[in-house]
Amino acid sequence: MDLHELYVGCRTYRRFTQEKVPESVIREALENARIASCGKNAQTLRYIAVTSPEGVRDLQGLVKWAAALPPEIGTPKEGEQPTAFILVIKTPESGAFSDVDVGIAVNTIVTSCWSHGVGSCLMGAINIPKIKERFHVAEEDTLRLAIALGYPSHSSTIVDLPADGSIHYYVDEKRDYYVPKRAFDDVVTFA
Ligand SMILES: Cc1cc2nc3c(=O)[nH]c(=O)nc-3n(C[C@H](O)[C@H](O)[C@H](O)COP(=O)(O)O)c2cc1C
Image (cartoon, rainbow, N blue to C red; front, side, top):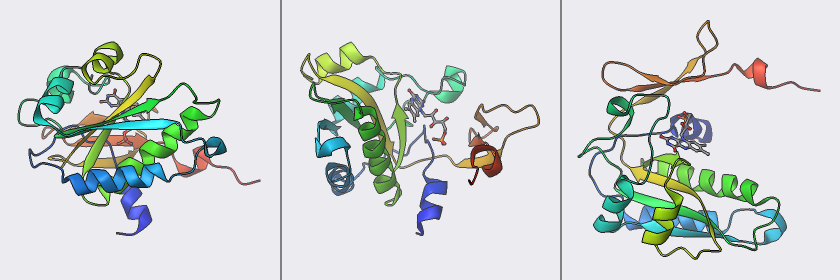
């Protein structure tokens, strides 16, 4: 797959087949994140790969899906849920650029997974205290994001912004997603 094609396809997915994500795919993604660039090469991020059926089940109720959609449309039902998660954690040594480090790391993880056909949803709307408790994250550490993983069972297509300029993603009658992106010339200038 060429790199642009990878980025076009690497969208947010919110419903999945129940085929398990191979551990090798998760390991490769985390290995790529491990060696990714980071501020001062400080390497302050830590990851928990949640792959056990109990762990994955417990997380399902602690994440919030698709703020732009009614829950009956945006929240995966039984049999549609992700089959693995990765928790991204900042340790207390994390410096001023640590959220940049998080961005680089999570993009590395999701693109690595997508190169194997594994889709993802980055999740910031998560129950931080409950997840920290359940997965024994140290109090002084910051749980920053969860990444839901699985083989997608819907499509997601980039579209132009509609005439009213709305950036809200939407679904069709099959609950396939459409994600409006601003035009190139609206976000890029050359100087
Ligand atoms: C930092 C961040 C946090 C996000 N948090 C959530 C979330 O809690 N729940 C959710 O369903 N989607 C979440 N998303 C997914 C966004 O809604 C999605 O990226 C956006 O609608 C654009 O869709 P695309 O990823 O297909 O381009 C998050 C994305 C990012 C980058």
